[in-house]
Length: 363
Image 1 (cartoon, rainbow, N blue to C red):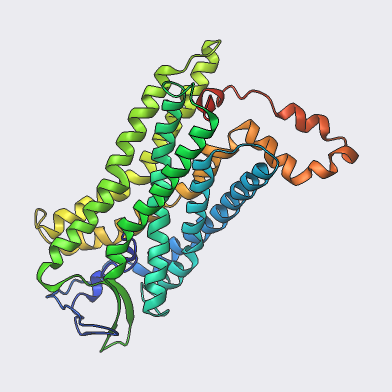
Image 2: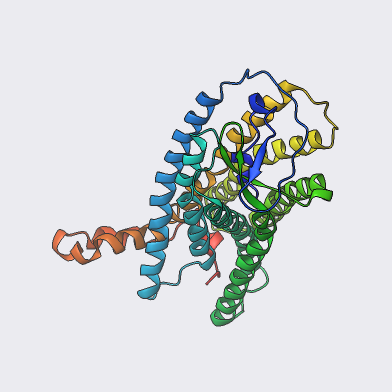
């Protein structure tokens, strides 16, 4: 997912500066238009930097806990959900890169860390962001099929199938992320000595590559995953059978939250990306106001999309009472006999009304 280009979106007030020098290879210079600097970029970028640090701290703690508890549970014989573990790993790797992006952000998108760091950071970010979205998609399909068509499949067969799917997801995320990373270069302005990390596509097809990469982001990063998630969770909600209406209503609220959270986090960003594509294709007339809007909107909606890395651990792990049992056990089990917490821990491991239907027969 080409988020490096969003962090380095051309500044509306600097469109006349086209005198750049590549640190490696040849650059492509394009005609630009001077726009008045009416957008308070400093206030925007510093504010977003604070939010990114907040996302980094919360995402780092939450996803680290999920990974650690899953690994602890695995060693004690508790079979954890493979997709949730891989999802947490992917989200953890995404948030780990955020401090590096913040360093660039507070310098008005300049890149002081060199071309190799530019490529590696972008590749890690993109692979894991696509991976996170793909694992959410696989989880929706897995949960529905597990309680409808594969109820009689052996545990070993399910385990092997999920391992294969997880491997395929990582390979797919790598393949999708490699092309744009390949074309990333650091460029330095000859007049201001400012260095940026940006994509430079083949000279004879710059526009086609730019539009193609953004369409890949929209289609593989949102359109297809959201359609699959919405359809299979809708089918799952219809399939749920419980002993009473209250449990069924609770189950459906959880399922509904999965779809809504994904939509709220990702729709604004991809809507702005589509608007950017229309602008590149001149479907929307050029104006400095539009450039200022795209600059601000892409930064803000990108920040909103990364909130998903903080929400995922809550929706897919902490909300499960059995998971909370494993969390309590991992932290305080060795002290439970002395502190009288044994009964409290055991009491927490009961059937989770709002989660039971989602995890039924998935192991």
